[in-house]
Amino acid sequence: MRILLSNDDGIHAPGMAVLERIAATLSDDVTVVAPIEEQSGTGRSLTLTRPVRLKRFGDKRFAVTGTPTDAVMMALAEVMKDGPPDLVLSGVNRGGNLGEDVFYSGTVSAAMEGALAGIPSIALSQRYPHEGPGENVSFACAEAWGERVLRPLIDAKLEPRTLVNVNFPPVAPDAVQGVRVVAQGLRDYGRVHFDKRRDPRGFSYYWLAMGRVPQTPGHATDLEAIEHGYVTVTPLHLDLTHRASFAMLESLYA
Picture 1 (tube, helix red, strand yellow):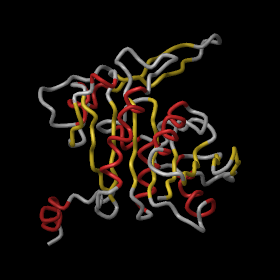
Picture 2 (tube, helix red, strand yellow):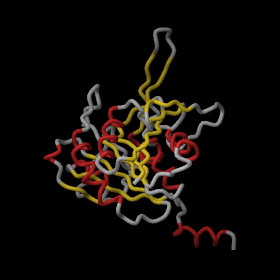
Picture 3 (cartoon, helix red, strand yellow):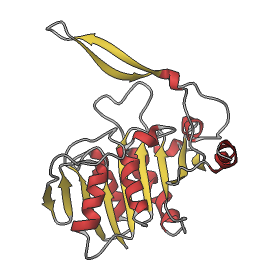
Picture 4 (cartoon, one colour):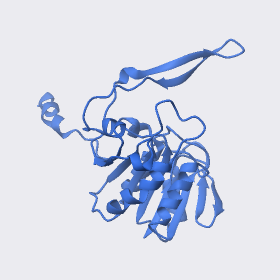
């Protein structure tokens, strides 16, 4: 099996090293094509107004001066054009990608690009504790559970244009409660706010900040399940059409 690895934290990120070790348990044919710098929050963006450069960092290890989507495109169109991957793995992200995070996440977007190309694709993220990431985020849970979660998935028959989003809880490996297949949650948009500050010259600037997320009982979505110590597995699909609205919209033009 030929595996392509990418991420949004950059080729030198600790989570990439974790993903490379996980991938090595699955195959000895692994290629890395990732952004050369952190691209968190870039979502599905492409680099269109400047050239994308490709740099080799070793045997089957490459970086691009672009986004995660650029990286996967470069891998498929250039680096691996003579032998495309059988599987795309993206991560392991420093921080969870839960709920509406999937719309902004570069990690999930790299997996989306693989899915668009018809390749089975999986995004992996390591949630960190509520007090914030600080300097040292532990990837112990992802490293211990990564292979265990991936092996059943790589043999699964995923529907076309779908991908799987995996999140590891911020607990010790032996404290994980198990694996839950759950729906994507949605947070209250009212939690979004900007932290306004002033620079030494007296000009205002802003940091995007997020309030705490209220949790509801049960394990119905990824947001609740991960809070209770489960590894979450969520199938996503790329067709955003809301078919239940067809009849209502067609009635407007009858």
